[in-house]
Image (cartoon, rainbow, N blue to C red; front, side):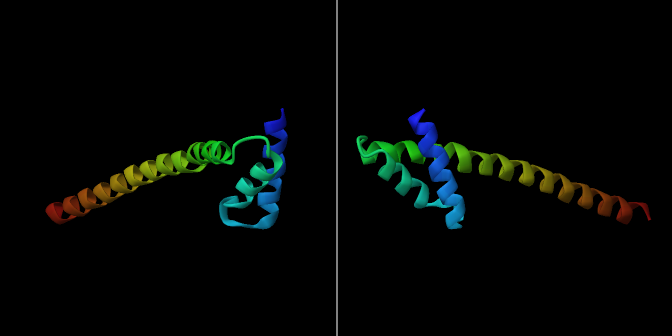
Length: 87
């Protein structure tokens, strides 16, 4: 429960700071609130958190957009080719 409280506090401070993605603020609050833990371990955990919370969804969204845009591009080329061949 301590980690949840620290997470909620650090996320709130990160939102209030207006830092892009809370970079640095989240980490600072976590390290300050958990002095009994190894800072390297805390930062490693936060790096994994950022990987799953930010980077993985970004990569999934990027893949979806690329597939959609490729489909739109190919449909446009097909329509253009049909127009040129048909008349």
